[in-house]
Length: 102
Image (cartoon, rainbow, N blue to C red; front, side):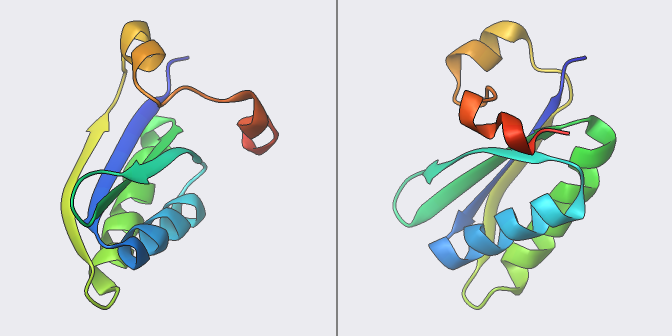
């Protein structure tokens, strides 16, 4: 079963930290990557079933916006990413993350 991908880009580190925390608590998802985007922006990506990614993304966006100075710059959900996208972008499950998979 192909897992959905959800990505949130925020202004500032505290907002992306709050988003990541809320996402993993808001659904049965796993955080697969986090990095700087550009300027003062950061992004975080999660994987899981689409029925779990959607509420997790909602929780993450809400938490980022409620963080002092936080702002969601962009977000997106890819319900069924093709294998070549998963292989090229940093959204594949890493071996060290397998202990967190459901």
